[in-house]
Length: 516
Image 1 (tube, one colour):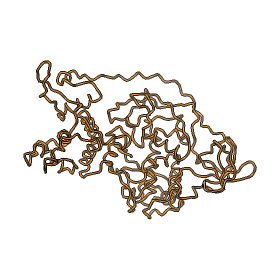
Image 2: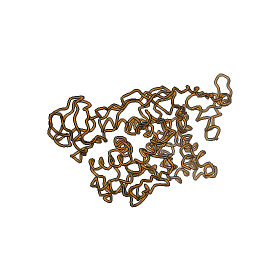
Image 3: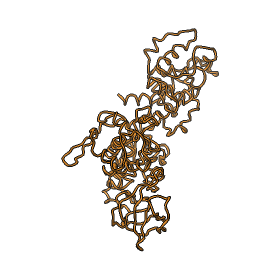
Image 4: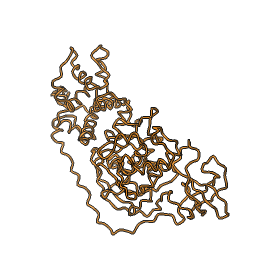
């Protein structure tokens, strides 16, 4: 999902015509639709072969490897879908539009992003192109656009250079397999059948606070890996010599459903005999294409692009750059929590300390001063970080943050002391469980609140309308309100503690502030 990008307007010269990405007479988009035999006004998702064509041709038009574009489309939309069953563009809760999940902002035609699939693809490709050319992102082996691994940081930036997408997990120094770019590159392996090199990044090359929404600071901007990197498979030309990367079947037609015409041996050289073809069976979900090839014995057939490479293949490293001085390690200033240790008997310098201190200082969280120390028989103030967070307590804390004036002026409508926070929740269309109607419904206010319900209440407040738990969790994932990468791993049924609430509200505030 693209968020917070600056307006992007691409200008392309075709003959004497200058075209903007928002031009309603976009010649490139129309030309690509025609070449792929797609009716842009149909408001239906094309079959897989046609979609493959639209993505491939648009990528090549802007000098972006089609493997990258198709994998991003896979990751953003899932199953290459732009329209729902009613012919409407699929728009997510945070306004991600269509196949490439473009978020509307100045420089884009929102209605056209919805109605025109090819324009949506073109917009996404242009964003990738823009990200690749950013000077503040690291370059891989001098930034060869044909090398798939060179797009690592451009793919990251398409989603956001946030801590959640760090190549290395800061706490463990392990590879962050859950990062957006890692998932996208995984789709290339799954659907293009291409194994990419795992780039050996180091944790000290990335500086960030895992509890912050601030962008990662890249301490190394020029990488020179002595690895056989992978060139795109879409630039082979007629008459060119290519090698088989493995033992692979030659097909009589561009589909695995056709007859075999023999097997290429790994390393066998063949000649490209024409332009590539898309999968003949339109309902088959492949990202790769098929090349007609001619063997040394004169026989011909089709081979999937995945299993071919340049005869002179392997992408070599660029010239070795001059050694750079090793930057000094970042100075980490440990927070001074001494006053909080004095004020709260159970305060600890644990994972929740920073966010709870933030919430305490803001007045959102207060300690319980009615707890008596059994040894000294004196009253002490406790934060109770491990105590279950109830729905009523969550609403109170959240409204102190989001609607403090409304909370101060809210009136109870019954003898039930919590009626005022529940009346506020009703006002903002938050689908709470408890109500003042019956004794049983009131009791729900004191039950522990689940992670999924908390997400649902916060996102419903944000939109001013009730949303489903799954929609809310997806919102949390896409906007950095959680570090979990999927609905399953979010663990929606786990009960929250008081330690969690300040972290969620702090992340929510960070997200909201970036939307202003």
